[in-house]
Image 1 (tube, helix red, strand yellow):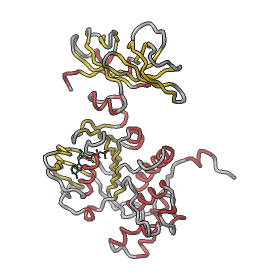
Image 2 (tube, protein in one colour):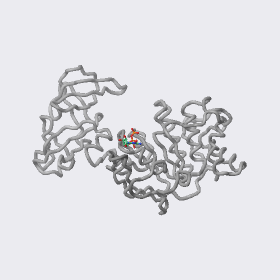
Image 3 (cartoon, protein in one colour):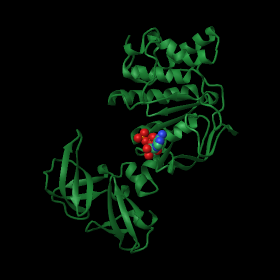
Image 4 (tube, helix red, strand yellow):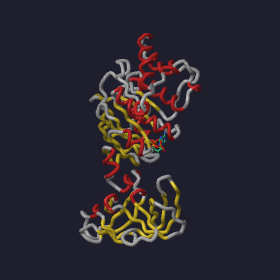
Length: 372
Ligand code: ATP
């Protein structure tokens, strides 16, 4: 009998044997973490506590310091200031192997001439784990990433996704209290990335360790993490559960990074939430707390700003600059003075066509300009 589609499609949820679960601990504290390269401060004072068993995503644009933070935690980069504590003990002076964390990088970094089993068991051999125990732990780790039957192959005989699963097995076989992942899915194609996301989360739950995951992909962070830490310029800008980051970014830059692509400057017109913006007057609940005359930046996601051809009423009157079909709808950009506005449309629109862009007032954010 065939398995039902629901069962066949379910992500792995195996109960790991004792060979796969980590030894305990895993509460990590970063206290005033600093790392300078010459006069450049790649980390400028990071304070963060990661609870045992938590899945944390470090999210931010290229160059914001995510990998530097991860490498400092791993012990691959010495600090130039601050402390790292694991379960209350300072660990920042320990060598990487003394910290015992599992690491998964963007490149799989497998030994090409060693079998999958040997690759996975490499760390155990280094630790001098007896052969019989090592074999059991390799089996458990390969079971967890569903590659037990591939153990005698060489890495070059596996697909990219399978190789990344080997890298994960190699990281978790040492029973790390903390697993560090640096953009582990960025070399995979879009479909495989989605599948691997579900697997990574399932493995995290199965082994019970703490995971810190670096990414610049907000969808990945939203779907994987218990808490997201948004960084820019070597600083933490916001920490929160995915829903907080998605709906309530604290400032216009975090909002931009979380997909609120359109920013238009405006001014609060009265105390009941009317904003003069882009030549129009919009009633935006998010502005109701602000005093009349306050300069603001209005931010909205493309999917919450609908373009209509001959609309009347409130909205931005702009000129279509580009448009593309994305299956369920068209998405495009339009020009309004100095601003570029990103919108959704239910029909195709012509380049140069005038349109009315109507933001969803409940999903439009308003930031005080002075607060930037
Ligand atoms: P990406 O997503 O592109 O990997 P990131 O957020 O991980 O970016 P980092 O690699 O942590 O960024 O780099 C942070 C900053 O520190 C960058 O400006 C980078 O140029 C700088 N930097 C990183 N490593 C070094 C180094 N070894 N020497 C000098 N500058 C460095």
